[in-house]
Length: 202
Image (tube, rainbow, N blue to C red; front, top):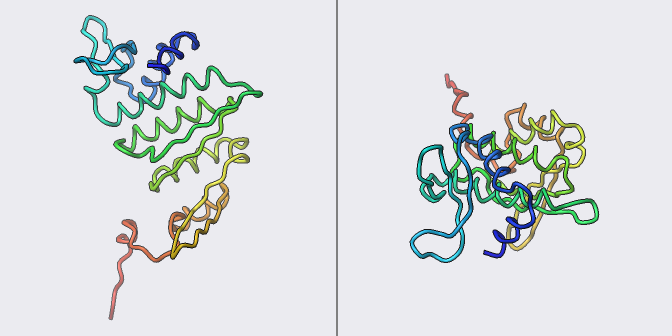
């Protein structure tokens, strides 16, 4: 309640920003209007609604998990982006963006988040287990030199109570991915693309 009330009073055209972001990620929502109001069925708090022309509004909870996760992320991020400046920077903690997303939607969501934050003083910490996310972020870094200069990936490991980390920049990531290596792992691990290589024994 506090966040929604603050964003509605503080962020100009907040609903319109959310709708625009969602339509970039989910093209089928291009005609939808966004509202955030009381949760249905007497539940506490607020929830998002999508209203298509000539139709009753649908709660975002009636959509799939991917759409719900994206709505929550983009609602918060659009408010953050509208209210930060250099003296008051922001931070986005984003855990496992790949959850409940198909590959096409995931790539559009990553693109949209980068478009929102690239001109803003917002630091993004992204945790992922997805090789697709790593590959797509690498492509984005290849296209945006300034972004590449400000971005690092860390591979972390906790073993027998000892924490270790190694880092990658865009050049390291590109080299690993082009070589068919997995930057997430040091151990020998059977990755799906290894099945493309057949071992013949004589």
